[in-house]
Length: 165
Length: 377
Image (cartoon, rainbow over all chains, first blue to last red; front, side):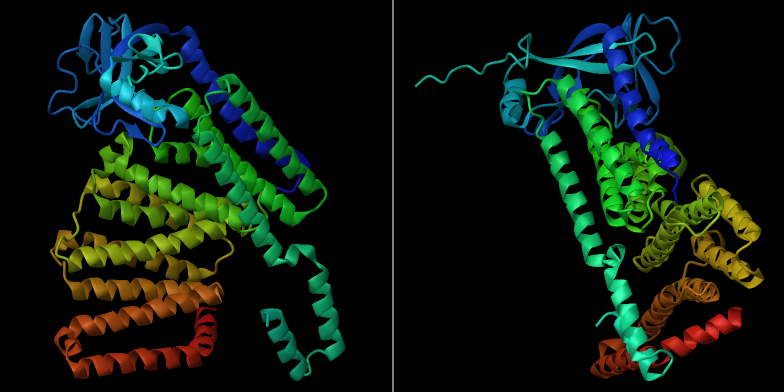
């Protein structure tokens, strides 16, 4: 039990500082990383929406990603030159770190949170139009999602076509 | 009538205290605001409801508010709630203090959700909960009541069990061996109870919360092991999946042996209970998977745990474990005489046994507890 005032203040400061560090780390990845735009498609096109986020699969355009017999282990997708790597060989110019799960490459960037009021509209748009994701990739392979594009435009400026009466 | 009123009435009747003294005690207790469990409950419920409300608001992901405003607003709110927690502590308002502390911890969880939303982080719920557990470990110790440590340990143990089955790192160790995960969880709780006991150098709320979950997880694991055997799945022995449990047994046994608060007998009883708890999970090695062997070992584990609880004078827990022991004996009767139990005669015997057990339990629970305490002392 913590009784002293100073100890209590320190104890309460720990989570605030940890959250601040997490926020700054995410901001750092977005700021220093190289911008990459990659097309996306849904795992299950009938149900792209889970809660208020879109779940999608990124099309890296790299052959042999998470081929059979390679599961639940760390892996890398190299975008320059395009190849799938089991280990970071230090020769890749643009690297995304992740892991293979159920023959699928996951880098923790397969979700895009959307506002409640636009959730269904964006789900339909991603199903019907060309969806792509803007990523920020650091030199060590850490990745953060910057934006969701629908037909090449940010989801925030996307307007659904007016219905013809 | 409250427990205090009942006790006071008994003491007055036994002429231990006078009616005036009983009244004075009653007035004194009623005047203490921190003793109002109704007020505590309402404050805690309010804090939880407000916390869920904040999480729901964040989940709505309002597009009209820019991301940086959401993040700054969240940190300002965190600092305000932390400040109010400190203020309640300084002004010695224990109920308000607990409510603000609980609100602060829920707000930290909501903040993780907000950061996840703003930066579109993937990740699973157990990762968020484990991160929350890690960063709120120290503030959890600031609690002076059981609710906050109880909720924290529930989230921690639950998310860790989920992680053992789902996370890449732990899945490599456990390899979907759910029996091994079930066996490991109570041992982890015992080890953490021993560590928190050592860190706080006293019987802290966190120690009690970990101890509670050790008992709950232990009972669940025993039931799961027996049910797996009962439905014919059996248990899969795996050195790799069992290694964390062995490390935890060694750690917790060392901590128990070094514990200065326990005498020799409670130490022996607790270690015996841990060892007998582990044996059912090793029966596949000796090809001894039978319901009767499992039942005997469960009875042994429950029996030694009951005696340990009596030896540390945890009377209510002792009574619960004695009840579980009786229940297991009753199920053993069904296992041994399954055919009989399906007949009308068997059902009459079973019903009579239930009533008889309840009567005996009600009549002898206190003398049994007193006997066990004397024996263990």
